Image (tube, rainbow, N blue to C red):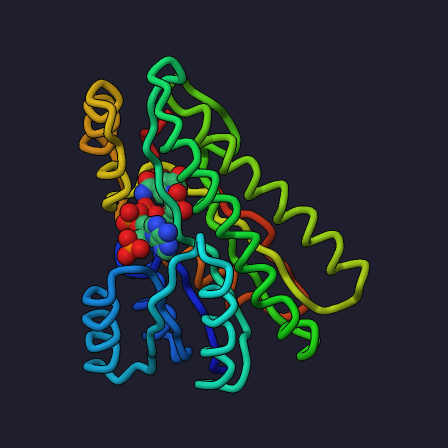
Length: 244
Ligand code: NJP
């Protein structure tokens, strides 16, 4: 059955690939991010192959805009079946580089953006007595490496918030599922956010050596979305076979 699926951070990478995959599977997709030209192009591409998609420009660090995104989805398609909190950035560096603005930015987008998404969509899902959150974490939400402390902290937070939400909704009997997608290296624009030259060089090499395509992650998301309603796929960790 067709689902209404909202995706943040859909202007590139994993979000874009997931929008295309879920649209191809017959769902109605609302894509959002800050770059309107990318969103317009994506919606045109989906429609060109017979899919159904709309976009709304949204900065996930702005809670009013995130609330408006949920209202837009309900106004356009009548409900929200799935909300994918996917927007994120990864300006990694060692702590002694004191990139405090980048720490703030990661906390604002990767953690607060997810919380704003939950606050925006949960009331509609509670009302419907059904729904699903897909929150993009990372293998960095399972382990920390030098240069990745703040990014990892944000991705651990996504897993903790997701698990708390899962337990709360299970107790509430709201029929709302929570799924975490934790990718390893995926070939996207994510490393472009790294401003520290040393870290950039290391991450670029790692991605050149073994990053997998975003379509692989999109297939994992589709699996979680398409699982029977009585079954919650709570986390999928997906990484290149050769990533250690
Ligand atoms: O990266 P990229 P991915 N408000 O850079 C958006 C996680 N992950 O697809 O606003 C709203 O192509 C940005 O859109 P725009 C990662 O942490 C990835 O890899 O137009 N949106 C773009 O659409 C992240 O959570 C890997 O600039 C904002 C999107 O975010 C998720 O996967 C590994 C925004 C980023 O797309 C998707 O990232 C891993 C804002 N303020 C976890 N700021 C990997 N690729 O290897 C950014 O473990 N965006």
